[in-house]
Image (cartoon, rainbow, N blue to C red; front, side, top):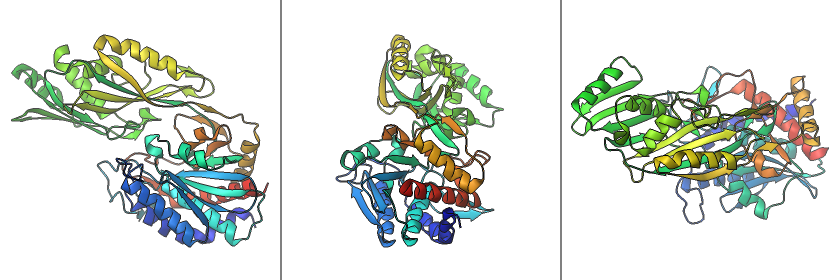
Length: 457
């Protein structure tokens, strides 16, 4: 029997554990003493470590930044890196986002796909190795991060006190093997002249998702109000109503992960471009005017002058994830995924240059440098073998605009699974997030085979 098949008897246990984990709304929140990512993130980490304890595995919690469960013997480590925090639920769910609901072979719930499902699978792979009494050359360790969705320092902090692995993968992407991850540059634009007409503008919960909703309150002339009403009269995704506070305008888009903004419809950009058709520059204010001029409804950075591409990883993408007007200093948040051969410093310098005439401050809030691991490395050969053993064919290698824990591994790890290229939209960071249970059990077998091989070869 292929060792991968040892995971199959744990299907129902994994389902029940995933249900427990999804029920915890582990969205990163303001830090608390001893809980750097807030109460619920810490609760999710503590819960999965307690479950690992109950399974008879050795565990450790590193300050509620991250923790691990481990099996085996040896002086070296091989790691599987997952995370138990999630993005906010957002609106428009057909089920309760923090309940697991099974329908038509799919399991719905926030975190089922990203990344609690994969975390539970990796945990039970450790249990399968332990129950089979596998003799290891190195210890196999599953690490659970608690702040991945906010590009935090959870795994960086973990490895400051824990040994680095010789091999590692993170099941937080797609199959085949992601050996190239674009750079991630997050920018905050703020300040400048305040709008004289837009009293309030809000869009987005996190910068790394395409906002599905945006709303504004506008005080303008009667002629301008009539123009806005006329422009939205036949638009299903734009609604404009008169209120005592001014015109209330709501825009509806389609959410998507910031690594693929072209798969969504940005409600913030739609609303900004509507306002720019009617309001003058002073009425728009610096932030909205810059976005109307330099971002528009594009996702490639063309109007901003940062459009670029390379052969290994493809084109730059740009996502307008956050807009806040009327709640303190006007601001907007951009999430830029740039090619592996490009420079985040050059992109930042250019954005600083073009935003300066608008009176804006352009600040780099976070940057993850690109990852590029050669295809002929020992790790990639090992993972190809594990995949082929289960699926009967070798996986491809590919590039992504997504950001995973693999960047923290200094060339020792890549993203590997859990989803297959022929699967439809999994709604990562979107409403109705779900996994295909049958395909996910295929992933579980690949994951176990890879963990077995990393521990024993």
